[in-house]
Length: 262
Image (cartoon, rainbow, N blue to C red; front, side, top):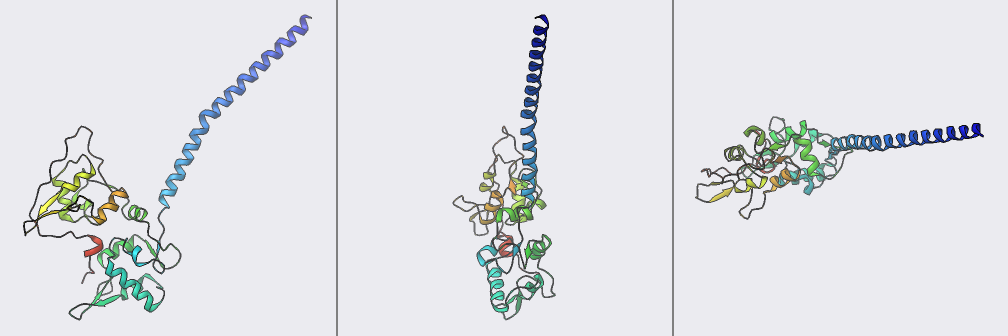
């Protein structure tokens, strides 16, 4: 009888021990599994972010999407489409150097290159960024992905230099200097207050319209988080009203005024 009791007691002890082992194993799984999933998800997220941009197929993209690309104005987009309609498919990027139009004075002006066959200033940046293809790729332009690809580093309006800010489309050196002069900003909306006086005595806003809406390129810069306000503290003073400076310079937005170099 004593022997039987001893055997039963040992069995119960072993069962309790196994329960403790199983419970410990389950706890370990519960603690490590979510972290593994989170780590893997983070890696996948980073990989997806890097591969989100797809090259733009110049044989498939339409005029509307071409105009989304900084450095390509409406007239340049139309010229490219007209060339494609007349000549057929673009065989290589160098074909773009042939696209030209006649000016009012009767001279030939090239849309994407100089007379000597070199890329224009804005086109050179796009070519170096490797955003175009003549086969494969996509025929639509995702502006968010494009801007993140072209301008990998966000510009903080409270710390970026004039040179860094003026690299962005829609931000001239003059306007970049106004940003620096009016720092610090408590929010990105502080840019809407920046203005200057024109020769005619009118007030012109650097980044917004007179009705307070963002200008064309500034909208996408903010949406794609290439232009941010991250350097100000919660208790920092509200950004001061923009200083007005007399200037008759117009906004030299990259997609409108960057003509080929002569």
